[in-house]
Length: 421
Image (tube, rainbow, N blue to C red):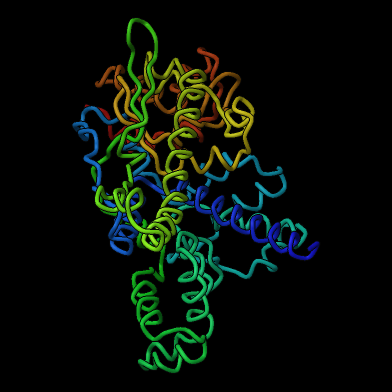
């Protein structure tokens, strides 16, 4: 009896863990990717209905926050560094991770072995590996790989089991068999049906061997808000859109069978409903988490919603996590790839987190203020980088001339000689 209870307890723990893993994955998915996953689920389980939600109207280009356009033009290494700085890494690990972001080759792979880099920086192997893991968790998937195999494996993080394990085994041990078309041999080696091997290979062929090149070639896609923020009678109202939290429903005919069918039919339908219930609960948790995170962001960054990018305050993922009493990784998953729409236009939620570059000044606010200064300057006598630095210093934002030049280049603003009319 004791062993039976232990077995039941272990099974229950495994079930809960699997459901929690699904919830975490659903939270992190971009809304378009979530819709694609649910479409595949509805194809596999035809007794459920899923209609891809119509997104809230994409805003005109003029309505998109300038920070969004800046992000698309920033060099990949700068985007990686910004993401790394928001992770709350220990200072020694962050220093190594920033170095690694600068040491990638044109494919996005490490230019040198990680142990060689650790030795050069006087870092321990554990610190170097922690820094590499942080870099490899950034977008695009596959970045920071040490070789082709690790690059492809890193891109499997959003694949579901058992497909993820099959794809990983093929990548590690059977790429030559794939090239020769020996799918039956692979299936025999892995003890899985040939059809599963064929599907795994189809998915592997969609992976990119050069994530840095793929990131630079990313097409511009329409932006649709996952969260809407607007003011009603002087109060900010936050709404998670159906685009971010879509609905999965049991078809009416099967709902009737669940109520009126015989015992065998009810048992069958109940089993299908149990699987879908995980998805439904995961989507609802996603909606609630997005709602809470967005509310906390509005409280912390109200200045942005009132006045725009120049009012973005320094903010860390850890600050929102502390506000909500959740782990920092939960906040990171919630904001990753999500778009917020407000009176200021559209902005990636991640952009509302910004490192402090001077007391009370975030990097994004400094960039926005720099753009305002250039916009208002005398076009016949444009300001030098040092003059802009002096102006910002008079407002309490002390930055070096070199930092001003770096921000100006990130904003695609020409130097003073090129701006002269």
